[in-house]
Image 1: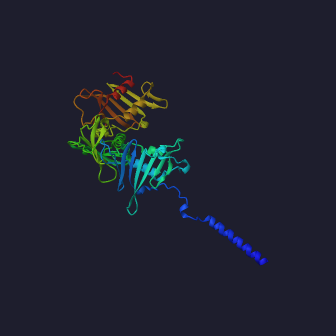
Image 2: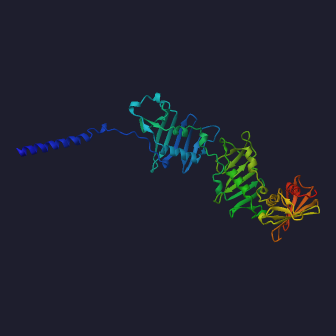
Image 3: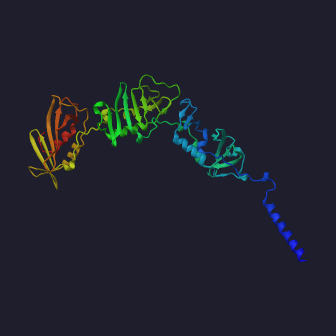
Length: 445
């Protein structure tokens, strides 16, 4: 009896096990649920992107590692370099911005209701595999979801499944073709520029290069190794590297020689260049050509004021070097009159009368910062007349600097000559400093 009971119990347990196994094993593999698939795109695999959007139609193509845009507009070249930063953002969108979710069949409506019968945006992505085989993925974006959650979209890998995409897709894709064009004149960033040359119709005007944390002249030969006004050359480099062009259609030609050319080095042996011509391809614009752009481009005429710089404009035009903190005594001689000043704990005073004097520190600072306004000369002209002498001394009485001002009817209005004792040159400077120094002291004028 017990044997029959044990046998029956064993058979029952076995039957239950078989039933559980069968319940977990699909009887028909064709009835298994397949998860919706969104195309997997890697940045390096994308060869071409074709976009048709309300704002425009364009094609982005990769050749080696460089991206180009084919705008398909008569006002633009047939092929232009694409902005690498905007292309990178688009590739990130395709590779990283996955759908919010797939639309359940219960929410599925006909294509017309979802805007997919006539998609607002169509994207065709050509992918290249490791063996260089090409495949194409089609994406279509329809209307926005009424709730504002995203956009309806379909893809060629799952033609029957509707996905919801973030609105960022539309913002990233709905642009005119010109949006993706690289309009830079120079590709190098301003902090990488190590050398700069300006050339006119007759040849090189000037050339500067980085040295010891600043810039010095290489040309002209007379200014070789002289320091350059750092603020001026940095501003010029900033303006050059920040230039943006208006692209022109194929067939645009330059005529004659450029009236201005800039060459910029950023580490390599061959410089990038910009050439500016006298032609006006569009109202208010001038024709230009650069090594970065495949064809001629247009620049705003207003940029000429920022770019047309002479070597004189870039000179470090300070006439003298004076540490005003070391000045203890200051003397002015004007028209046979003498004024000696001394710095005390309470400020500056007239050494002869003990009278307090104001504005002397400012006067000394202005003297230390004076700049010449035209080319210096080795000798004064006969028409120059000595007008005033200034001397600064330290606490031991040692002369720090001796300056002589000269008036000259032959100079342009508003200028006078300044000569620093020990210097072989005479400098034309603003006469305002001379006049202001006169006004600081009770001297006859």
